[in-house]
Length: 168
Image 1 (cartoon, helix red, strand yellow):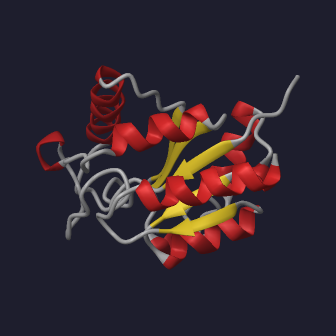
Image 2: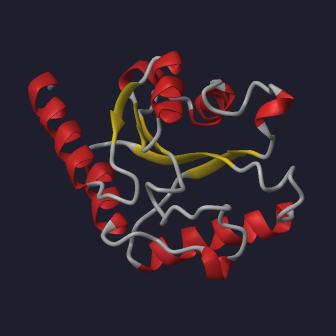
């Protein structure tokens, strides 16, 4: 079986607008402009698109697991309307105090994705807007790109495309 490559993306501040106090409902969930365009371009370079997100509002009882699943279904469906496919979403519902193995900067979410989708982590990328995202990506063995919170994926796409051109 062939191994896949992935671009892992943080959710809040990368795909959707960052919100102080967490995104807890579909009404608070606002996809950033042009996300579908750049994710489609990244996919055309031969990468799976996988979201890895810390979602402590679940364990803080600020939202239910069903609320989180509805937000993620909404994201998948809205991007699909723009012919953009997200292969999977992995989330950690824990607070930092739990010290679990899945909350970034730990690499449990990467491992889940790796096993489920047969991913070569050292040929994959992590795009995030925080030092925690970048540290997690490095720990997992991925190449990393830090973008500005609520910025665009354009610069990340350019970095990946240039790397692909220089290494193929």
